[in-house]
Image (cartoon, rainbow, N blue to C red; front, side, top):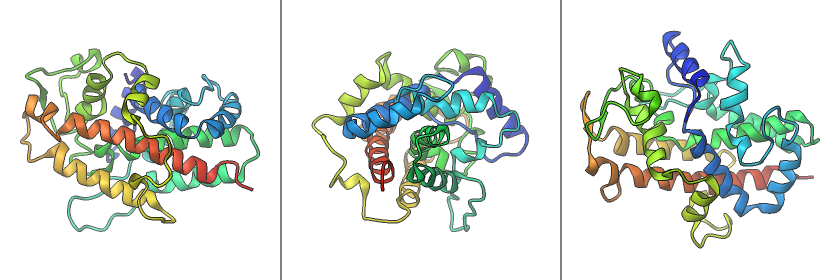
Length: 282
């Protein structure tokens, strides 16, 4: 669940005119993505974990995926890093200008990892890459409509909330559904390692997986476009303001919950790919 500090930052960014909330997916989502990557590249994950121990919070490889949302957010009063967490692609043919967005932040942190050195700078970069790859696959962080759904109000199976935070929020949003409700429903109290194993099934490696796509210098651009298309097709899905998201929307065949599960898996596979290709290279 998002901390009160992170929720406050979201509100501040919105009030200040930012285009979207700053954080994506609850801790369980980010950590599940990292747990998938850890299974696929165990040796490198162990080496990165030794570096991550320099972080102020738990330096575990899986826990580090939440570091930018937990520690960085609470120690960044100017919210300088808030814009790193998303790239709000337009639903029409309007040209997209990144500025300070995920498409800029991700390669910058990958470059730090390639430089190596094993210092705290690299530790922070590893944590950021873990976090940003998760954000990249949260569909509403790749769609600019109504600030990533944050200003699009809905109910969830007739309810105006799905957890303790949203019970206090009079304007429960589509963003809340995709950022928390669907994840919490899938997790059902299980830990990231358990979820990762369930999602992976018989998958043992990222190599040769279709989720990686064709070799590209900037694969995250294609991955972001894919997430944006999911936001348009599945998240908004011709909904009207105030719509109730019923069982068909949530659990119907090929619907929202299945999309979230697929995005977690794909994010973990792609994170393993990016870290393997950039960490520990001569």
